[in-house]
Length: 279
Image (cartoon, rainbow, N blue to C red; front, side, top):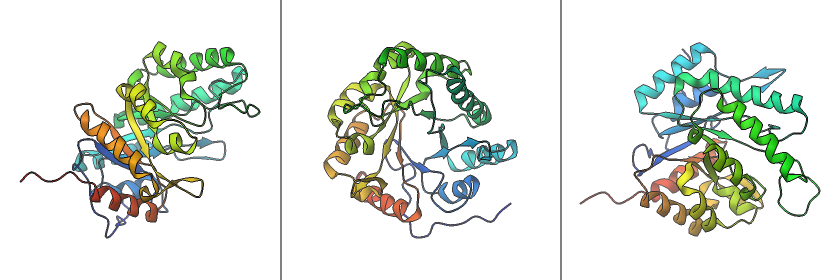
């Protein structure tokens, strides 16, 4: 077993908030397992960022899955699984669409023994010409194609509310018919909502009851996935208030950053926001 790499000087927030706090599996420059070993004492959940391309894959082997499960049991840890970001679930070409579906299915099946808290799903857009934030020029066809893809993914047996569709650069309401038809979960990406100029309160009011995962990250100089100190404090506090007010519903707030400096500053920000200890 590879020796554990330590993240020194970072305050733990494990079990300290009325919701789970997580981060990604790419904080230190290493593979998934070393990241999980280093992060497990500090947080409640780790988002496994998985990919599979012809040249390589980072889907954990059965032996790695067993070790990840053991680490989870020893550290009161859960996992969310971020399915590939370059999916074509709404594509009109069935071959391309099914290739994306099969990538999701293989990752869900490979990680099933981890009993993931959620699977985060990108339903990407195909209209690059419109000035409006729409996902496709032909919304009806796009909706039909995405619906076929979702049905195929759910045939793995994953719970619909555990398949959480993420807010991206287009108006999320275009997904409403699909979300409601399949009773899907939602991943509210707070950074995306703010970066693309959408209304945070409207998204919280409309989707929080379906939301199982939230992504939090800062925006600096037009770039997202920065440290949490660069997230608008009003928006940050609004999210924490909403989560705390509905603490009986299991949720994870993922600090979606990808480096040790951004993780360190984000954790210090979260530590400064800890609820007061009972007298």
